[in-house]
Image 1 (cartoon, rainbow, N blue to C red):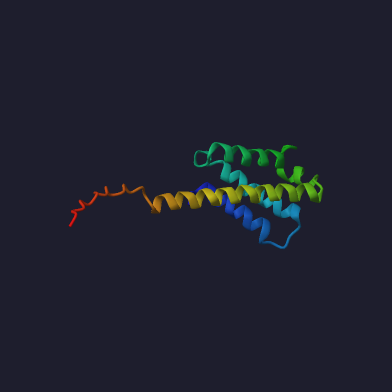
Image 2 (tube, helix red, strand yellow):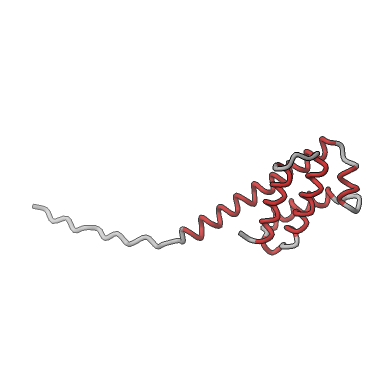
Length: 119
């Protein structure tokens, strides 16, 4: 899969695979999201816009650590879930692209009508 999207999946692993406070996990996931966004040509425009909006919320006070540390737990969880939603959309896109590449459009053979000869 494309390099930028791999950062999205790393963000998910950081969010769900660690036993740390949500703020710490979200901060680490934010770094991966920023790296993913640098690969903008890989993203569909609507999905890129959503990911950029989330990143903007995570850095609204200039730096991610400042912004995230000032969040209450509910806001941090909401943004973590938003990253997970983006990851699900990326995964769906990945699956669709794989499906399309493994099943290229093959023209159907022309069916000839058989000539029915009555007895």
